[in-house]
Length: 588
Image 1: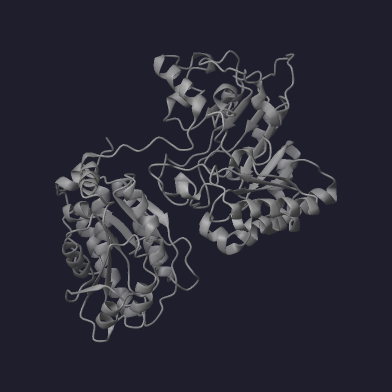
Image 2 (image 1 turned 60 degrees about the vertical axis):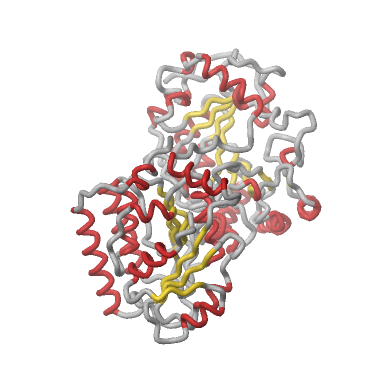
């Protein structure tokens, strides 16, 4: 499409929000000057601060070239384009062409990247396309923190990629794109800020930004929680880390800002005193955003920008955007969950959580496992012993757990303990061999407590080398694909570390008493259309002894055959879930 010649007053692309009027109206009087385009929703990480880690928001897809050009061509006054959303832009094949298309229109172009696929080839493509800014979201100063926050062990790879790209720029004299390193402000990592500045200097990056955490206030999952935010919660210690980082950056010749890239240092960490803490946000009056096609109110490709809905509901929403809250709208709870919360509120407490650990001869590990339990959130620990001939039961009691003798069978042990936990609202299941970390149980429970899920299963995406066999990984992925074809639900693992509402579990009609228990729970939950989340959890080598399943060929074959039989039986079943499961299906 030919570009029409036009005369316009140029704006500073980094101060684009100043184009908004001092007193914004509910209806925009000019086309947007800044465009956010979600070029893909695909990503190769599982960040604990990102909603896509915990729920499949829409089918994976890249923005087509035709859709891209049709959106861009509607915005004649465009000054700035941001080509990222919840996905990783550098996975998009047409990204260099998209950048070039925008640059030919005189648009300032940037995007955030995780840096995992920043190769010499892709880097040169960005240089040749004329990209203005490349923002590397690193979010940690060391490999361990990175793995905990971003869900994958790619820290060293990213440092190599960015260092090589910066060396290429210096060697060939390219000053664009400007490369910056970004760290999301978390209570968990604020102490790493000075070290983060040092890492940036080591890889040749000259700009460092601390950006505000976008968190969920009432349905928090992962690290996107209010208690992790720095905004209006800066302690004296946090301020010391901030000042130390600023001083170090100055000594190293690095530009440093604790307010992202568009406002004065520290502003995004402190509340305004005029009662309008978000009044600097001009996005409703300066931006256009294109997200998924399932959200027509945000789509520019439907009927054109000039005819977006302008009814009373939209006007009310525009007025509400004047005072943005640092959270997403709360999730409506279904009737059964509301009843659970009402009952616990009447008793003056939060939902009661029981931890269930099925065991068989785990004397070498059970004491260590129970010592790691977060007793301030776990009200009751039940060790369901399957007939141990060693000191498992004695050591469990000594560590403060209740012990229930249940007889042989993994599923039998889990079901018996679930029935015994009659005063619990939420059940957490984990193995007793030390492979699961009890301290992370809160990550499984939080979405259920918040009303965002009925069933949460851990996915061992951060597993230590050697903690899982290759056959376990492939079995989890294979059966996950099979369940997706049957029920449309994505599973990546059959991890035993999981949490579920007790009333829902007992309503699923569980019958598998052996190794197929975990698979049966996942299949019945999917068929009952429960709200299901997967969250990344770490997996460690077992503390002692050998695995009953993966520790021998015989055990693996026995468990594998039972799991396949369970899958076949359930795939052919056509029964109806009971009342609690039916009630948990909807959100409203």
